[in-house]
Amino acid sequence: MLDRDVIAEYKLDHDFLSEIYALPGGREIKKCIQCGTCSSSCPLSYVMDYGPRKMFSLIRAGFRDEVLSSNTIWFCSSCYTCAVRCPKDIKITDVMYALKRLAVKEGKTKGKKAVVLSKNFARMVNTYGRNHETELMARYILEADLFHALKFVPQGWKLLVNRRLPLFPHRMKNMDQLKKILKKVDELGEI
Amino acid sequence: MKYTYYPGCSVNATANIYRDSIAAIAPALGLELEELEDWNCCGATAYMSVKELMSFAISARNLAIAEQHHRDVVTPCSACYTVLNKTNHYFADYPELRKKIGQALEAGGLSYSGNLRVRHLLDVVCNDIGYEKITSLAKKKLAGLKVAPYYGCQIVRPDSGFDDPDEPTTMNRLIEALGAECVDYRMKTSCCGASLMGTQEDLAMRLCRNLLLDAQQNGAHCIVTICPLCQMNLDVYQGKVNARFKTKFDIPVLYFTQLIGVSLGLPLRDLGLNRLAVKLTKPIKKIFEGANNG
Image 1 (cartoon, helix red, strand yellow):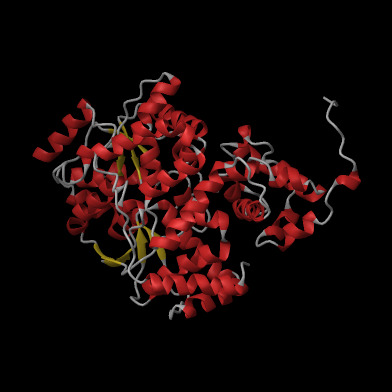
Image 2: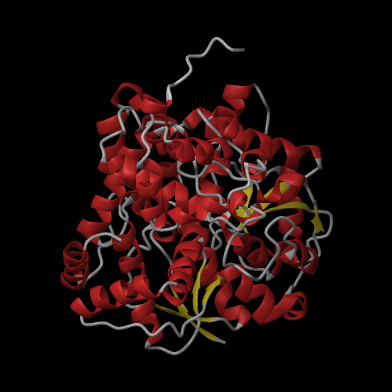
């Protein structure tokens, strides 16, 4: 049990906690009492590097790399089960979103397929104003999963024969307005 | 009753059978749905994962346009519902965020004051139209049909407020109002894996397997759901789940609007019931055809 390397205090990032505090919803983790309700409620904590409870503990201790490079943040499917059960009302899903964005910002997303999906989703919305599911999947496969492209064929086929796979995007009309809003957000800077 | 209708991107694409069934039942229920003009994507969970303020701002654009009509906005998609509702609540609760969203909207010539209610279609159908009216409109009761309600995760989670996050009953009561038998099972609010089906297929399929197994073991003929992504994962991937886990699930996954449509006596084809990936099984067809004749 004790064969793990002990990480010396000086190797930890003591600014990490204050950085997390500065994120929207980040200060909430102060309230965590380490009860573990979140991790035991999470449908995917069993495959996560660290469950949400442990993540909060790691953040407090300053394990920056471990937290930002963990699969935990990308395995969170935003089902909000932890958030509605947390006895301290911590918006855990929001904290996970904040960690996702920080990981993207710092480029700690190597091999994380969900990032490719999210980025392409945002690009799709910025282009058409709406999500075009067919194109989103095509772009995702090209960028992240080309090696396994064939595995998507049977499901795509099922959608196609049942006329549930539109080939052309629905576009919104006033893209100009949406772009102005996005540009303004760029100027304001993310929160 | 009149509402501003926000369909969302999936309802116009992979969930077009949801759209068709909503269009088919709305007149009979006296539900007037006026589509929000030139709506844009709510941002879903994906946009929020990369940009927060942008995600809130694009979501708020819809709210700003909807507010001009002075009536509730209703969406049939759980993800749209959660995101629009979350934007609405955070707009009210966080002054700094409200200010920035306001500035972004202003750049697009819009403004939002926060006086809008965001509703899920299930909430509107069950609580505004009501079970009694639905029962009275039902031409034929779906007696003998065992239906497992699948709420999925987001519809009953934070800021929702119309049902319990762990033990919701809105759809249970609807199923009973239609004369069918409601199969209660533990996993009715467990996550289907959502977009992880694209990125972590094996994990999402495992979640779907557990769900299908729970519904099957409790004797369900079919599952009824309220979310495009839940329906897609459980329906379109059911064959693959069977191959992966050596199971033999044959459980059609319907939208709640399709089930209402059947009891209203509408043709199955108009409800998109011929376009499910897992086709209606014989026992279900028998009950549904009886329902149509009645």
